[in-house]
Image 1 (cartoon, rainbow, N blue to C red):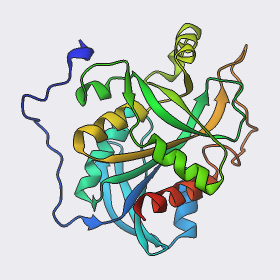
Image 2 (tube, rainbow, N blue to C red):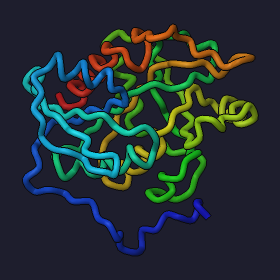
Image 3 (cartoon, rainbow, N blue to C red):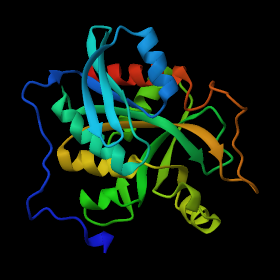
Length: 253
């Protein structure tokens, strides 16, 4: 069973490669948005420093300097397996233990005003990847939640803390499961948080998460809550990269 998949007693067959010559950076920022990556490449003096490889092809990583600190950035795959595998493979390109992860998520509570940043405190493990990095449990604690919340307070950004529901199956978010997760205090649903946190705990890395409150599930019918081609206030809003960048600077200062 998947709940029995965690094995810390035998050796990994395919090991991650920690490159001794990897470029030292203060933190790495992950975006899931091609629009945001395009914005970063246009607005910052980025240098390509390597590639992450899969059957989908090469996924480039970049480095830039901001306020005297060096940061890496790349576009992550959507979904737990690809996101986690690429994060581990970054260790062959960069040397850091700090990762800022941000992206869109569904909102499970209509009382949360659209535009607020959601900061996860724990993630429900409705995916498969995390069970290979941590013993079975319903939730994994998001360890740096209070650090991210402290940054949001200092920056004066509207935010809300709460649990998140990490799922592998976006088209199988049933009404019954939604009601269960909401009753447990979940305020968002996304596809990576539980797995990324479990991997970071296992590898000794630090993850710092925040989500953009996007589509609303807490309604009689699914509400996309955006206009066609809208960027502002969505996961493609370049302003959210600026939040991620300031958060990255906050955690390394």
